[in-house]
Length: 359
Image 1 (tube, rainbow, N blue to C red):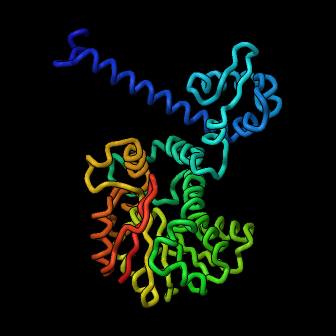
Image 2 (spheres, rainbow, N blue to C red; image 1 turned 30 degrees about the horizontal axis):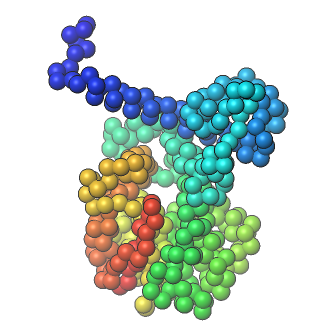
Image 3 (cartoon, one colour; image 1 turned 90 degrees about the vertical axis):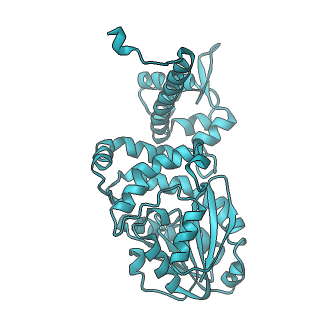
């Protein structure tokens, strides 16, 4: 048995180091799942809004079982997600922990990402089937938390950057929007990006498109709640079926790489633009080579792409499967094949690149 366990050329120190990394990742996976539970049970928000609490006090405030909460708090304290004060056995959040774990809408809040990942754990059997067979997996077949989590994760970044930085980085676009025009939001999901723009530019007519009907229903409801139902229109449609045209601006937020035929989609969008109109393509920030992306953000994006983005593309016609880390060079090739001749990177953040394209 010992001989079977031995591997040639194993360095004991490196073995111990790598095993430690894997254990740390396993601890992180558990911390993520428990964090999502704490978010849904309002434990974090309660800790954020109160002074240091005993387990009994916190259980009463949250309306959860005290014994389970004690185990949860112990795990979270061991993970460094909550603080434990030994002298009086109380738990609390630092201001920084409160932002990351409980400050809804802050760009540093990670609960949307946790929700996306938990959705993948919940449907791991389907993910394995797709992985083994090479089949596609339509967006609509994912767990409901995937849709809510995606909106929750991306919305703060759009709120922080879209109106203030990204639109002004496009040549002449803000001036056109100020005068009133038509804008399309492709793959709009729950409508956060459309609503943000509609609030900033009330004279513009915004059209949000998504082939996932429940997301369109959510977007329509959000527009009504946010007071922009008058200048927003949400339509269930695939990209190539869009009938409206004469758009001064067409936006595609983190969606082109999910499409089965991104070249055909971009070509149709070019035809939907008004003369001199602009396509704004927002995609995950990535280098053009795998070696450029061997870091934490690359790991997260490749992982999401394995489970969500690439299977979504394969479930559609063509199934080009660009992947979430396609890189600017590959995206430029897609746009050029679709007939766009003026392409440049207009802006970027820590996680996104913004590409401006004109015919």
